[in-house]
Image (cartoon, rainbow, N blue to C red; front, side, top):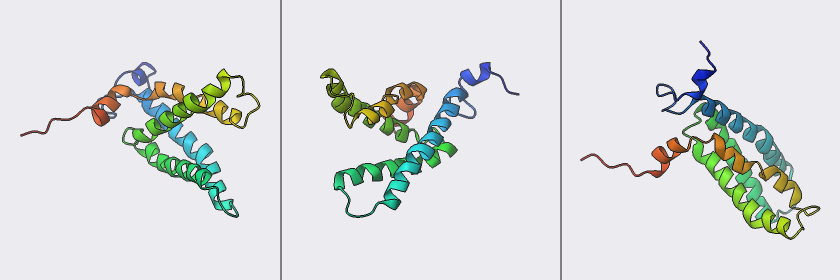
Length: 147
């Protein structure tokens, strides 16, 4: 039976102690990454003609790769959390090192970075749906080997 209260409580049986709301939001995020960024990146890669600017090509390939891997996140959201963390991290870095200096000097509006800044600005807020306790326990904390 579905219960609103239950989706906000940790679920040790199904989701390793993570709240179901986090699982649902992560699945939505994986789906949006796959459909929005994945579609655009794969269409760009498959339809490009002529020589690539090698730096721009790396960006399109990275976007195509991590969004395609997000398909696995739909199936197992917790196991594929590093992809979400990667996405949040690189977009936040870009905001700090590219967009913020432009904004601070009044040069972001009307620049070629303005549209990307508008898309990337949501990345730090996406960190709110990441189950950070789980990330700490599974990906960061060293596990002691049993003797």
